[in-house]
Length: 280
Image (cartoon, rainbow, N blue to C red; front, top):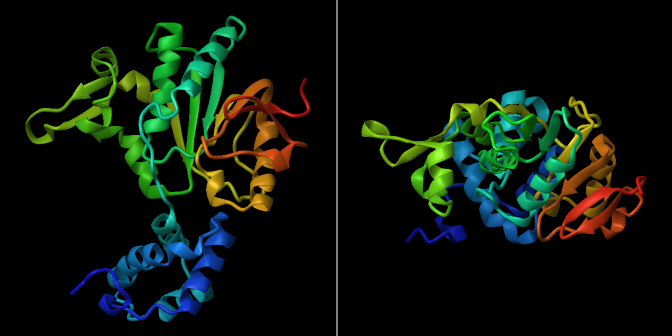
């Protein structure tokens, strides 16, 4: 009976295979996979083996290491990236963002970087918060939305979601910022075009030595990403990201992330909200 046990597996997946995967994804994306992730790794990568008609994990990993294409490395990374998100997750951050935007000098065009945009719920929430702060669908705000996973970026750029993704929003928000589908697209909704125009989507790996982005940013949202990195990787990423903040810019982290080990780079100014350590 197929119950997820080792006996039910289509492919042999040894402890050595798992260690190779851990080493490769750590080197490629900085993700530190726990021992408990073995079943998840098998399940997700087994789909690649079937798609490529490869009969063993050893053959797949050998090919990846020896002459893996950029496309297959991206598929490997996409498969092992976890994307859990929702609209207005950790709502207090959006309240703080609105206050920050309204304090900016008149005529200033605010810039926001959403560094783990996933399927788009977070950057669109940022866009909605900006529209509400300024009382217009065309606020003086530009949002850069990046992610390492090209599949979720494609979903984000489309801006189409099942209706249940927005059911917890107020009726006013749903009516103002989303178009309800009908006919063949009944049960779906799409973000309104003015909202989409505030966003630019781009693939970016936070492990890159340099980032092809231009600051300074008035806010950086990098939430629920650092939990997949070990402390040295977190510090290295923060050393690259935080200098891209403006002097008064805010850095927003996930609810289970803390950076006590990075006091030289970043300092807490609220609940998982930070500023540059070199600005007082």
